[in-house]
Image (cartoon, rainbow, N blue to C red):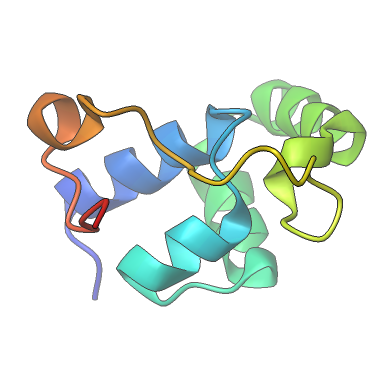
Length: 89
């Protein structure tokens, strides 16, 4: 069961263009389809549609389509900003 804090963090990570679904899986063990279901449940329908459109157009959300020069999914300060559980190292 996800806490309200976890749900909010997943939504935040989902909106971030730089954060791939693999990073969400590493931290919360949610696959892409589960993230989509969570987003559909938690967001207004219009917001969900905007998010889906954005995700489909965003090459950085899927590690297979990311530019190989991008080798991280969070900024150096993200852990202190959001208490991210995934260590950079």
